[in-house]
Length: 270
Length: 235
Image 1 (cartoon, rainbow over the protein chains, first blue to last red):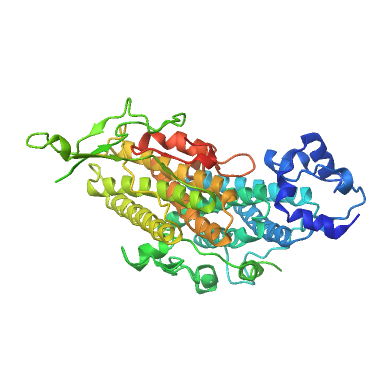
Image 2: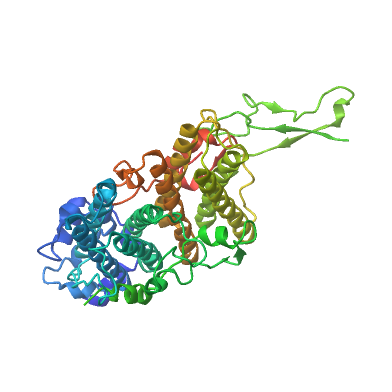
């Protein structure tokens, strides 16, 4: 099998619009890895990976052949979702941490992050790449935080993680746009993180949106999460003209590059 | 002085099955306040207002976003110009923020599109037949519908964008709409999972994503001015 041809196909738009029977598609996908969670693949993703010819049906293909900017983006997203998933699971499991009145919120957020982990793993698998393993997390960031003994800190880090997630996904849009199904799914996760962020911010007496580059009563250690959020220049349009800088900056969320997102995540990875 | 008779579609709801928009039958003639007294017959010219088509490719998507932002801006302008009775200070501030953001979005698209093409969506007219702007529940419910629709629209349209810069812009806006939606939902059902409810987020943890055709059908009741987007099978 010609690997370069296959990689070419993965970035070729026509590859994704070739119609084929779903059975053939699923067969191709499941040949990539024994643990492919075919059932978890969204309906559109399989057809987006369609191939009309059998030439690429190689049962000995290893997961690393399909690594690309797109799969790297998904791996980064997966790390962030692993982080959030474990964080909220631990939080909910810590007796007396989350007040009863706030439990419904964090149970919902936790449910989503768990689902995101599963979804991203299935997506990576369907693209022929082994999902990265869950890192070992240290939510104290080397002793700087005590989120599981101090609820205010739990809320603070939750806000930081959600606002980071929004910016990180946004920063990867360009890397996943070659696969329409993956792009749409990424957008659909991205907006969920934004809903989460808005809610947690408001629970901390902040606005749901970020004004200027101010996270809103956030410790200096989280500055990287909000750097650049004060931007008022959108494609040459000054967003601060109409109603001032706070409104102009809040109307748009900014990206984080992959390495910026990694740097933030690494604060919490052993 | 020439008096213009505008052949308009005033009052027509968005009819996606309409084929020949040049038919005069069934279209009202809007005199726009002019009377016939004292005017000569040959003083009238017919201005044929064709139905605008959003266009092709990225231009179509930008115009689509512009249409939705016009709607949101228009709605919140009405909200802040006449706050519902009993509104709290916090909610006044929140709706003022929403108004600011949507107007900024709208004006951004106007500037961006006019710089990119001559095929720019005109200023649309809107209608809110079932909305009581003096009632908190009605305003919140409408805001929720508009914000959730905005999220679904951007999420579903992203794949049609070819220019990566436009995609990033759309991304920068949709997360703000989602923040809005979350806040509104929380106002409606505080202390619950509604901010990110199961009615919009599925078992995979994915938010809504709707095709343009479905968005326009769902939101069509608000658009007084019709438009088409033939590339997306609308009109």
